[in-house]
Length: 446
Image (cartoon, rainbow, N blue to C red; front, side):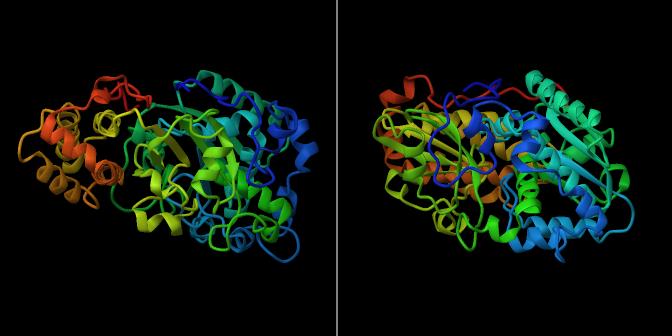
C-alpha cells in the first residue's frame, strides 16, 4: 500500500465480530452516500441531543452514554473519550470541535479507509460531539497531499449542506503532511494561523485552543464510534470487546500476510487471529511491529497475546494507531528499524533538545548498527540515549522513537550480536520490506 491509497481492501474479509463501522462496506463493497448512510444507520440523533441539552435518548446525556460505553480514543493514546468531552463541555464560552483525520502514521490506513467508506458516520459523530459540548463549528483536518480524500470528503460535506442536516458549520482544511502535524496542539496552532508544530506547555486545548476557545480534538474513528453509541447506547457498544476495553477497533494489517487489509476487530482478539483474518503469514515471521513507527516490535513467540492495552503493556507495547506489520523471517529487523528511525528523526519539529539532537543521534547509530559499521561503544550509547529521550520533549514524538529503538534492540538481540561481531547480515543488503516515506524534513509547516 502506498501513501496515496484510500481503499487498501480488495475484498471484505472475515471479521472477529459483526462489523459496525464498516457495516456498509461489508454489505455493498461501496462507499456510503448520505442516503445509504441514513438508510443503514437511521437518522442522526442530533435533534434529540439538542432537545435534551446534550441528552441522548432517555435520561442519559451523550457524554454520560459515551462514558458508560467505555469508549477510548482510537488515535493512539487511548484516553477516555468522555473525559475529553466533559472537560470541554464544562468550560465557559462557545467551544470548537476538530476532527483529526491526518493519519500521519505511515503504516496506517484505517482512518482514510473509514472516511472513504463511511464518511457520514465520522461527520455524524463530529456534529453530535459539537452539540454535546456547545460548539458551533467543526474543523475537519486532512493532509494536503491526499487530493482524492479531499474530493471525497468535500462531496460528503456538500451532500449534508444540501440536506440542511447539521446545526453547526463544518469546514474542511488541508494541512502540511508532516508526521508531528497530526498532534492535537499542532492542529490548533495551524488553525490559529501558526505552524503545524506541537506546543509543549499550557494552556491545554480544552482550555484555550482554536480562536482561544475551548477545543475538542478527536480522531476520526473515535467520532464514528460516538455516532453509533448515540444511536444504539452503551450496552450495545459493550457487546463486543472486553469489559476493560469494549467495542470494536480498526486495524491496518500489512507486511508478510496474504491479504493486507483494514480490519474491524474486537479488542481481546489474539494477534495470531488478527493476522489470520488478513490471510495469515506468508512465511515464518521474524517479528511484528505493533502500533506503527512510534510503536514497538514483538517477537513471534508473543503473537498469541490479546490485542488490548492491558495485555500488551507488560511487553512494552500497545495497540497505538492500530497498526500490525508482519515482518518476514527473511528480513533484517535492524535495517527495517533504521529506516523508520531516520524518517522519524527527519520529521521532528526540532523545537527541543531531544528532537534536535537526540533523535538524529539515535537514528545515525542505528544506521551504523544495521550496516555492520558499529564501533565498540555503540550499543551502550544506544541504550543510554534511548533511556534519556522519554518525557523530555515538547511533545511525545521522542518517546515513540525511544520505544521503537529499544524494542528493536530487545527483540532482535541475536541480530544485534551478529552485526556487532561479524558485520551486517545478508538480509541487511536487501530492499526493506516496510515502506518508509522519504526521510527528508517537511517542506513547510504552514
